[in-house]
Image (cartoon, rainbow, N blue to C red; front, side, top):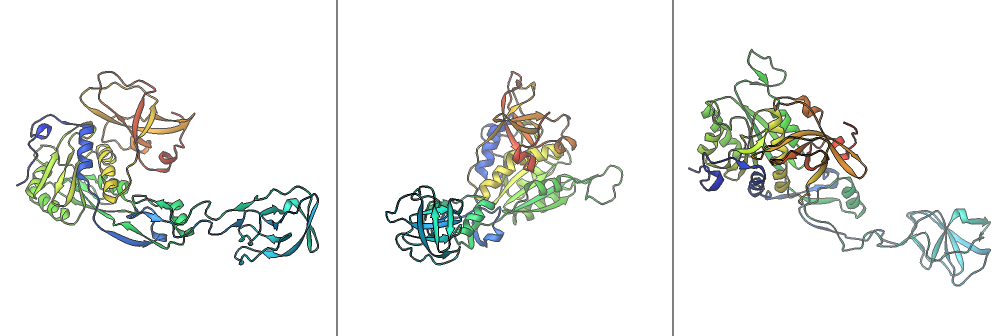
Amino acid sequence: MPAIRQDGCFRPGARMVPFDAARAVAMELARPVVGSQTVPIADAAGRVLAHDIRAPRSLPEFDQAAMDGYAVRLAGRTGVPLVLPVSAHAYAGDAPGVLAPGTARRIMTGAALPAGADTVVMQEQAIPRGERVQFDAAIQPGTHIRRAGEDVRRGDAVLPAGTVLAWPEIALLAALGIASVVVARTVRVAVLTTGAELRAAGDSLPMGAIHDSCGPLLTALLAAPAVEVASFSVGDDAVATEAAIATLAGHADLLITVAGMSVGEKDHVRGAVLRAGGQLDVVKVAMKPGKPLGLGRISDSCFVGLPGNPQAAAYGALAFVRPMLAIMVGEAPAPALTARAAFARARRPDRTELLPVRLAAGHGSVTAWRVPGEGSHRMMPMVGADAVAIIPGASAPLENGSSVEILPFGRPAARGYRRVGP
């Protein structure tokens, strides 16, 4: 039966795994899911490209007028004022035709430039004279023309595999005439909350029971177009916990349990994972909150065992699960985000601390303001925050103004750093 790895810091009873080492283990455990699917671009937002995209055509595909005005073929004509005969009109969607030397053609923005035209004069610089047009200023050849291929050339690599498709990429695909794309298949995530005290929101609460917040928390935090999340619950029973873990691991790419990772009488998750044929590479992490956090595999499924307190579960998901999911869906690696701490903090050398913060942008940098409220059971600090700041262990205090890594929650205020002030 697989067991906890016996080497180094992963031995039973050995010291806790440092936070950064545990994050490295999580990244090693995560593997891109096998399989892809073709989806129409209308359904592709948030999905991850499985293959590189090369442009099947140029953008623009032909020379276009960049202004409403007149396409002209000077053919050596000079002088001010310059009067040219107007041969026809050209609108967007019209075939380009040919412009005779020494003539002009009324043209609208986006219309194909007629062959032979060497410039477009905006209408504000032209005076219509019946079937002629007069230009009172010198004409600069080559102006106000969108050249074929100036944005994208046919055959260009425009989107690499691993790109998360959002509205700009969808617009580019549509402009290139690409109606569907091949994307990585969705990652199946199962969340199993454990505890006899848990009741679903809306259920009545007998004395001593609580509503399950971690299941909905993780479902909302992890759900994405490329991720399918299903939530389940089991009581404090070793046999039932093992059965649930074995069943869910057989269907999920990533199994997450909540609570039960410690060593109390009702903490059955560690043993259930091992009896279900899994391995545990990490069972304790030197972090606050979230020390009893497990990482491993059960057959083809990744396993993450999160603590039961809401802040510990949420911050563990931000630090470990989200990066694992990025690998599993095939996203290109993202750089770490940092902010300037607008607070000081005493530190311990033997643990990393995760603190809720809210973010503000200004003067070329992002500032992280500490959200008050101690205790990993508390909800309101998370409601008031945009992100988590990672405070590495050290003997010296964290000084106000220090650079810290941040894990944004993903809500709009965090993405745009729109909040200001303490």
